[in-house]
Length: 316
Image (tube, rainbow, N blue to C red):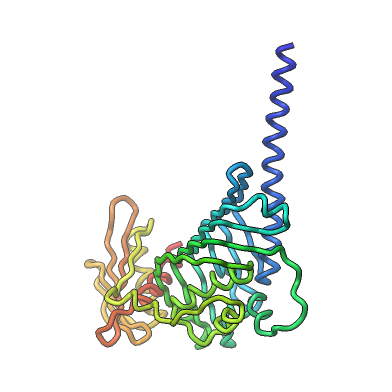
């Protein structure tokens, strides 16, 4: 008898566990489809979990890819999305989030050979430009408080030639927003803040965001980087490989004016900026690469970050 009870209990536990997994998978699929519909470009989610009793949702590895007409790659990588929701509002067919926390790990801003910007080709922007047609019915949405973190922005410009001009901005800021009333507003906001940080003016997304009720503050957050002219990263690589990769990038993107392999120093020019690359052997099979850039004696962290990004691509 006891054995039968244990078997029944085991079956019940397994069933509950299976239902929990199935529930998360179904909702994960629904969110992926909805996000793809809003943006008009493929979306992928690594992990998803829904808490019913604590009314919370946890999403990890939210990746939105570039639209058609642009190089393959990720447009936005949201490493973490944590929200608390109102269960009662769902029964009234309304999505009410009392709080939301989103971490934008990296955003890739790409201008293709035709001079088009990837974010301007998203459906959420195109629809805003046209301002016509009947909008698709969506569940009413309300976010009381949003905490948005912005990490790194990688800007690639293919309009000047085959080799893109690459700038990297280590923004590392957090901002708070109140009273977001639609998924479209949320999507535009996540796209907009990195655009301001990268000082990309003249993009259509600014006008669309204004029409959608997303406040556009003056562009100029780039002043945060003043005084810093370098970017560094530690790689799992030998000193020789790191030095060769750095040398190759400077030759490809600009020119080398001096190289000192024993000292681990390379000097050159990229985008009219004076570049210094320092390669230092660390413990084990690790090597640190530090890139500094200055133009007319002024620090150019975006150029230094771009050179370091290209080096990291070669050391992958």
